[in-house]
Length: 240
Image (tube, rainbow, N blue to C red; front, side, top):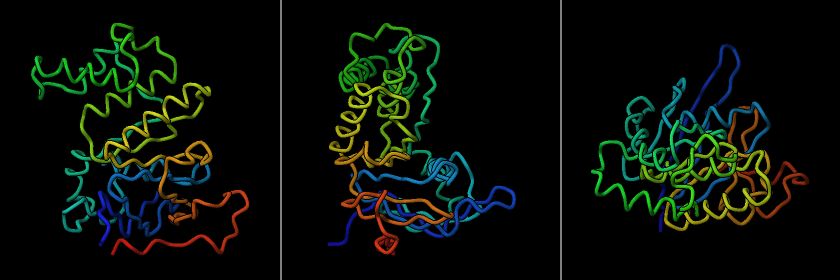
């Protein structure tokens, strides 16, 4: 049976001035999977995530979302905005309570009577029921990350892109974040996690994509990346 994909990317290129950031990038995100995106600082991980979230324009590239046909990025942009959510490693908190921050994600599209049970469910999801009336600006880094995840979940994305979601978190906060990501994946959400430390995400991810010299390559997960020889890095070719 042919695998189902939430998002497929082909021929994606991006330059900053004369510097080539992404060079003919191609990969697929299996539906309901968790993909780890690695690469050195400055390799272009954030740029790639921002393009997939329609926040940054590539020089060129084609995308295919779920059942849709292949389209140039320009035509697929509106659909990316509707289906893909990007979370920055330092999530922004609005002035006001945790509840206000969560309610903001619902906007005017959800009536007040329907918003209340959704907010309660989001607070249970992140284990922060007692923080409902707490000022969001006073939260720790780990707590902000969990509120940001709940806020994104309330937008009902099909694909969630996370940029260094456990960076600078203590052990307990990191574990809580990982548990939350596991729950989201188990619920069928497709996740992409950009990180320079793949060991934090062992057991959570099904595939690892490594960004180097502008190209994305699939890396076998059962090997230590620090000792992995170059000849076991393989290009994925199942997106055609």
